[in-house]
Image 1 (cartoon, rainbow, N blue to C red):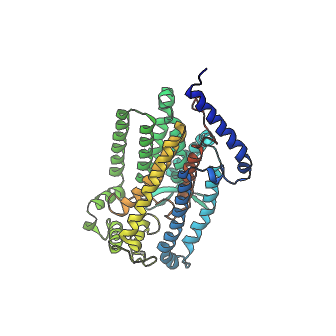
Image 2: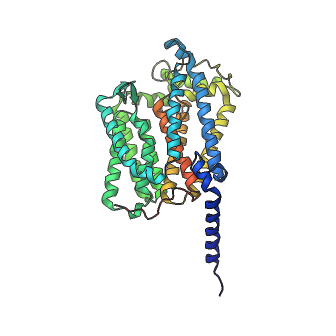
Image 3: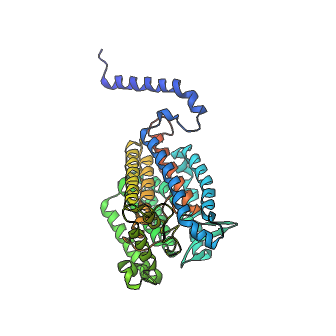
Length: 408
């Protein structure tokens, strides 16, 4: 009797899995990672190196951009640097925890944390601290939380739960989820925080597109979001000033256009090779928010066009690795999670660079792993951990999610 090609292929796969179990069973129990390094996909190996480079680069750039203002205002040039390093410790711990947790488990408990942070965002509009005309922070003991940053990883997980099998989900569940996401964006706009609301809308739109939502429906939602954003700008004077100053910052360069003008001066003075690490002039309290919202301008001044090109190339490589991971994922859930992680990390980076270079209206959006802020840093490490976990699960040896997940 002839043996079919499918039977031969099945026997080979079974033999390979038995060999894997016998060779690596001991290593898996002894390793601190979910899989031994020797069998990591090359995308995962490259990704963890890129995350390490990004994190170390962030510490160095933050130290350079913040030492002057820390020395003048805090009396200690390492003030912001020390706090960022302290926040890096729980960030790396969370990264390790997420890396060793199945995406299936994260998808199960994400909804609870999502709605807790949803409620905290609601509270920021009532009892939040107002800084520069925006209420984004809550004080809990000695901590200052920014729920709109902390919720970002759970936006990815909840969108994956919704869009992974969009055509199989009941209409009432679709409606409830879409209304929840829409209300969340409105609450963030109410703070007001147009940049984070826009990034959230872009995240849902891209994940919906990858999840199979009709393009006509997505275009309708995009139009509704655009109209809502315009209404927010018209109702908030400081947002209106930012848009008008973005169009022509030199018209009022001492008032509404001051930030953008100083940012452009910093980028322009960098030249081809930059002023040199630590030698920025604009960070001497000429450029506001030089270690948060405009930290890329300081980087451009110190490293020049060459450094900016290398950083953009770094983001391009990161995007390519993210795409490779998404293509290798074995189910819709991990595919969408990996896509969402890439959209947030790369999309937020590009929006930050666009603001600093005058390609977008001025917004308060941090540069992942680089800008000062514990909330943003922890969210970035969480997202990076999920992306790396998706790559490891693509091997098929750990954390496989059943494609027939029960839909309520």
